[in-house]
Length: 223
Image 1 (cartoon, one colour):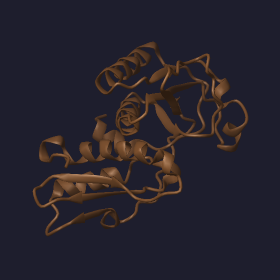
Image 2: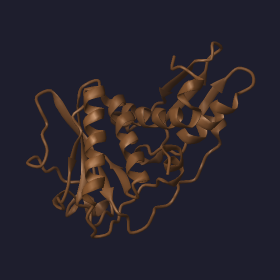
Image 3: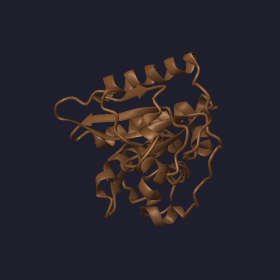
């Protein structure tokens, strides 16, 4: 499965099987996390065999079950968009490995002894990982025209990018983003107003990751 195929196959999953992730897959995830941290200055951390974060409280409200593996989303101020971009790359890698996932902002219990949040850093949430009890369900797709601006004809690569962006997970599936194809062929991506403003930059990074994979990096530059 390619990353482009993973975009289509990936759905948010909240219920998991009591099945351990194989050591080889753990190593691939750790390698991807280390690369993201090195490249973007993040502090993502893989936590395995830890059921307490989703054992009670808000996790029950979020209808999670049997989650014992997750990625702690830790970064410094101003790195939110990069966290979203690189976190989603890891989510899509997990999908290619046959794993399921779910971005989680609030409905989990913090376990500070299982990951490190350094001075000046923030834990923005986690990504639940594992073998899903089901593959999840795709949220309804909206017309791509509602999410972009362009003058004149829209090239195929841009439409493919938009279709991939609309398959991206966002906070409460609100999809508060907009793309613009500029006259010089570059692409601008921005957020729209939302009451869930604390996650907008993370969401923007996630949808930019999807757009880039759908459109092909060779076809455009970010404005």
